[in-house]
Length: 169
Image 1 (cartoon, rainbow, N blue to C red):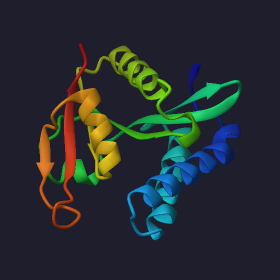
Image 2: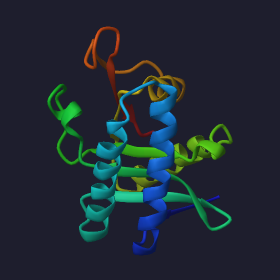
Image 3: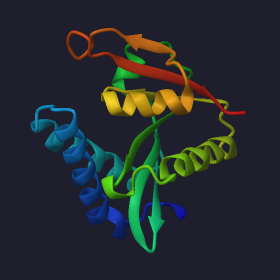
């Protein structure tokens, strides 16, 4: 596995990764399919911004020269900033996607380790992470433990939005 910053040449492959991951996720969670278009557009904007300026740092994981995962460090999103008190200049870990055929093979753990190294390199002591999809929430509970904040019924009855404030050792 190879962890690296994105490059211009990755744009098309990342778009495919986002579409594949979101189609799988939204199908499994029986969500509205229009979420795919909106979320892919949002992710592609973050990719473009990270290539243009240094506000976001976007990384990929490659296996045999194929992008199989993505993860980014961005400014905390609206879910976070409108619902909890944040520390200035702290990053959100976001845009975490792994191609469905490569999931449950240790790539998520690898990306998590690598992004924490990047955060430490940047002198960060904590990070934010949020999740609205149930399967994402289950994964992050295993990795990060109990969420720091629960936005109860945020997406409808019984559909919460979770926020973690993670520490960098």
